Every structure is written in C-alpha cells, then in structure tokens.
Image (tube, protein in one colour):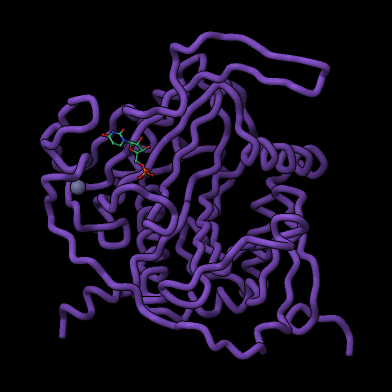
Length: 351
Ligand code: H2U
Ligand code: ZN
C-alpha cells in the first residue's frame, strides 16, 4: 500500500512556525471506553451582583464599572505589564539574560449581559467588539513604546478563565512576543522569496482541495489548518492580503463578525456545551513599519477532544518530542462542517 494521509502515521509541517506535528490516524480505530458525557450547564443570570465585569459593579481596588450598554474596556487591575517599570538589562556569562519589558494590559467586556457568550450575541453586537478591538489596536499601537498588540480571548473554566462574563484581553508591549515573532519571520522569508503572502497561497490550496474548510463567506475562510495540533483547532483567514484589522472595509468587518459567530456556534454545537478555547488575532506589529509579509488571521485553540468533559492532554511525548494527534485535520473539519449553524440553546427554547 502506498503512503496516504488517512491511514498512515506521518509528520505534518507548519509553515507559519517551522514546527512539525505527529499524526497517527490509524489510532482512531482504537476502541474508546471512557466517558462521553455532557457537562452540567449552569444557568447564569443576566446580571450578577458579584461579577467584577457586570455594569455598575465594583472591581478590585474599588474602581466602579460604568453602567455600560454595549462593550466596555479598562486597564487590567492586575496587569502583567505596565508602563512605569524601570528600564534595564541583566546578563551573566552570556547564558543568564533578561531585559525589562513594558506594556499596557486591557480587559474587554463583549456585552453587559453576564449570561451570554460570543456565539449568542447578534452579529451587530459582535461588530461592536471588532470596532473596540480596532480602537485599541489603533491607540495602543500609536504609543511609541508599544510595538505589538495581542488581542485574545480565554474562554471557559477548563482554560483557567476566572469569570464567565463574556470578555477578552489585550496585552500590548514593547517586544513582539515569541509566537507572532516566529510567524512573522516565516511569513517574511516566504514573502521575500515569492513576493506573495504565505497565507494567501495557503488559502488558495485549501480552497482548491476543499478538505479542511469549515466555513466560507465572501471575505473570510474558517478552516482546520493542515498542521493543526488541537483536535478542533481552527483559523479564520482573510481572503484579502491585509496586515491588520484597521484595513477592514465595512463589508469585511460585518463578514468577520458573521464568521466569528458561525464558527463559535458550531463549536458550541459540537458537544452541546459552551466550548472552551484560547483564541486570538495575529497581525502586524505596531512598530511603524509596513510589514507587507503579514497576513491577518485569528487562531482558535480548543482543548476538547471527545465530549464536553474529555480534553486532549498535551503530555508525555508531546512535552518532550512533538505534539501528536489521532483524528486528522480533515476528519475534524468534516465534523465541524456538518454541524448546524443554529445554536443548540436556541433550538431547545423553540421546542
Ligand atoms: P481571565 O478571565 O482570563 O482571568 O481575565 C480576567 C482579567 O481580569 C484578569 O487578567 C482582571 C484579571 O487580572 N481583573 C481586573 O482587572 N479587575 C478585577 O477586579 C478582577 C480581575
Ligand atoms: Zn457579569
């Protein structure tokens, strides 16, 4: 039998990072006798007097949230980075090295409603979140000490998220952190060699093959990348080669809100649970350069494997060798593609 990606163990290459992942599709034939259970859904109130993100409530340090009606952003009261810390370097024997780092960390509330999550928000409200991300990228990025703005969302208890109120974070800083720096380098090498965007060329291949596409609209594609590590890992990639979110047209902003909603609805429908993940935008640094090599995209890294409670462990060989997966990217994409685009909770309430 000749080698194929559906039956035989192989290593897949991630052109954005240069790393490899081990895929073992033959193992999906193993019998599974573990639990397949639904998680217990807690019913949350629209307003929780004890939530530090709800409108009108007090946060740590005594600051009071305004009675906000749509989105709300504030500087993190326990920020990992701040602007005031002193500048300096530490070096000993060439091996012990450190540099001071400054930055600004923000917390973004997606909605005043304590009981909703991104997939349950109307598209118009998700557009408001995108507009806030744009404002933050613009203003934080304009700060001469901020050279990179990382917009992200950490969702669900399983991911260590401290509060179910729909929110995300933004960490901005003077250095480009490792993940975007590596992706920037690989996109840069490709752009120099071909004068084309790495992700535009990748998207072209994916649209031809149609094997790993989950969703597509006029301006974006959501797909399980060929090199996905997490079982249901996805990426939203803009069809147009843009470097950052300030380049969206109005139509692109709406289409982005639509695909964000559609993708997260499918995620929730997969195991009929509020699907946990870490997700975030990768885009051009804000160091004043053009960065034509950069192509805007949004990563979703969800931990769940088999049910609302069974997650993938990144242990053993994966901590010491390479990440590994059994279900292929193609199988995961097929499963996500086949799900309803109506949220399971709204279906229940229709009955
Ligand atoms: P997580 O849910 O991902 O932990 O993010 C919530 C953030 O909110 C967290 O970084 C901040 C925490 O530092 N926070 C405040 O800024 N003020 C508070 O009163 C509580 C939490
Ligand atoms: Zn709340």
